[in-house]
Image 1 (spheres, rainbow, N blue to C red):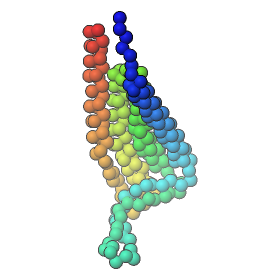
Image 2: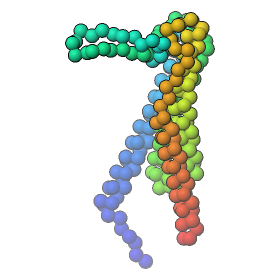
Image 3: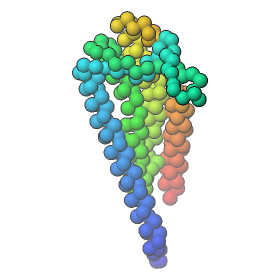
Image 4: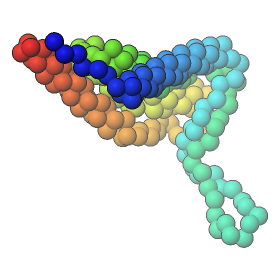
Length: 207
């Protein structure tokens, strides 16, 4: 019986790969925890703060600004940050929902990356939990990209109506289609992991 010796260079590469995977998993976990902490602090601030800021509220009429430089022909903006005092509870609730929708996708991605690195570390990446995790993150990314701007727009509309802010647009939402593409890409990755898991199971049955 002959034993196959592992060369020192190959062993070093294996240790380096595990060190990199451990670093990525730790960094992803730390980022997820920090994001969760910031989300909680933001929720507390929105729920109890005396002032509430509507970031990028759309205006009914663009506001022009003058510049001293002769190179600037004209300058205008159709959005503005508006800080409210004693905002209605409905406005606070929708803003909290928007922040939660934005943060859930990043927290979910960090969790799946950490779990995937752990599975790669032990040499078994093609497991059902990784596939389901990637699929859930795809749904979170899609919901985050659609729900966050929608909730934010509803909050600004509620503020405009409740406080008679005629300068603000009644209801206007700008949706970025990029999260939709990212969600479809993650679904494809989840499908690839599902196929990889089946192939791994079939190959184990042949041994």
